[in-house]
Every structure is written in structure tokens, then in C-alpha cells.
Image (cartoon, rainbow, N blue to C red; front, side, top):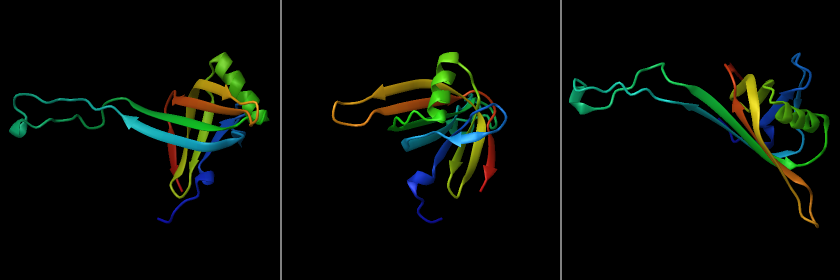
Length: 137
């Protein structure tokens, strides 16, 4: 696998609820993490006293975070409204040469900042809120 350009990792938001995805405007840095909790089933009979985990069990989750410059675009307005309404619409995360992850996410944090001699910036955090579908590139 070759080196990938960071700007190609895209976070897209469903603008209308009908699969019309648009890239979240102004993002400069994006981070995606996938997690799976383990279920410990170790007992006195476990071979050699080693921990045993139950395969296929536990809760899976994903988190997305990003930061960038405030642009007041359509996607920004949609993200703000989703946060205040507490909705969980579909998002897409395009990971170059890996694939696309799509599913419901809730915006758990939005932060805005700015200085008198610089641009207005923002940070956003999302948490998965249902089953995610992965499509390989």
C-alpha cells in the first residue's frame, strides 16, 4: 500500500436524509477510530491460567473527530442543527485505499474558537449510534 494523502480521508454528512452526502466543510484534520470491547470468559479451567475471550461478543463502536476552519457552508449548518436536535443521521467516512464506512452517528461535541488576528476554527466529535457498513475500496 502506498502513502496516502491526508486530505483524501473524508467525512461526509447526509444533508437531506435520502443519501445525499456532502463533505463536511473546512476540515483540516480528521481521525477515525474503531473499538470492540472484549468479554472475558477466563475460569479456573482455562489452559495454563491464560485469559480467554469470547469471540464475536462485546460492543463495537466507532468515533470520528475533526478540526478545521469555520466556513458557514451547508454542511456546517446541518451539523450545528443535528447537534442541537440530537439527531443521528447517516455519515460516510471515506478512507483512501481502504474503503468507506457508512452508518448513523451522533454529534457529541462541537467547539468553536478564534483569535482577533486569525481565522475562526472548530472541532467536532461524533460517536457511532447503530450498525455501520463497511465497503472495501
